[in-house]
Length: 73
Image (tube, rainbow, N blue to C red; front, side, top):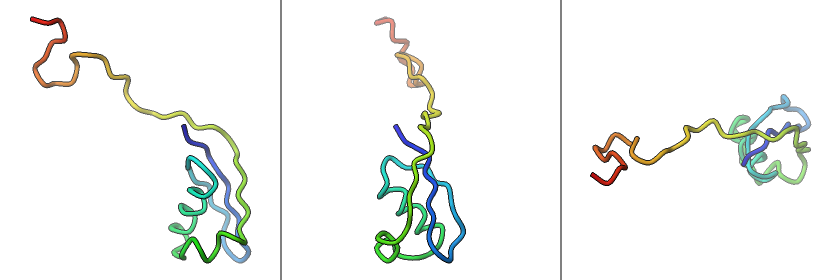
């Protein structure tokens, strides 16, 4: 489960990122800004905005395309 965070840092544009926790959000924002995350972690403000559900496929047995039907035959 991940969340959408808004990360603010003085002198930088506010970014919205998806991450599992606040530290992950800081890392994502640092990548977007091109700076080391340790340089900004103590000074940036991180606000969790909402929960984001995964957009993955639902896996069912026998639909992996490997030739197995999942019926035991």
